[in-house]
Amino acid sequence: MSALPNCPLCSADLTYQDGSLFICPVCAHEWSAEESAAAEPAERVWKDAHGNVLQDGDTVTLMKDLKIKGSSSVVKVGTKVKNIRLIDGDHDIDCKIDGFGPMQLKTEFVKKA
Image (cartoon, rainbow, N blue to C red; front, side, top):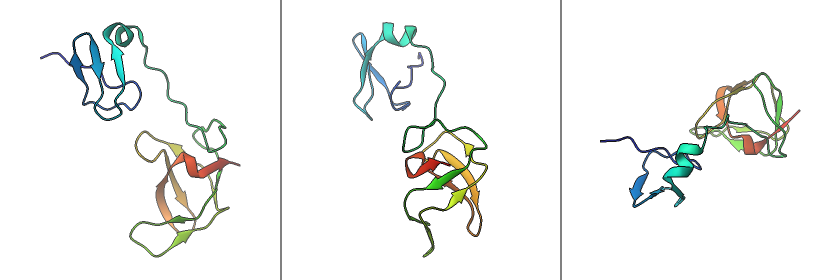
């Protein structure tokens, strides 16, 4: 069995082939086999809520109150997070917040300081 490419939009591995098209059932994106062969995997770029490019080691500020799952605590808006590490996955930032400990954040809720 030949391996089908992952979806270029959402990176889902559930793609299937219909004639000459590949189809992603997760995001409904369709692309041709020629596009798949010609497309180079682009290097991922992480951006904050304002579109600024983030890098490992940056300092960011929270833009909204974030409830901590499984706790009644809240990380308040304006909290600075130093020395972030960018990761792939549902949450893009791996960090340690003073007073709360290690956690993961989404880039859509932070701005670069």
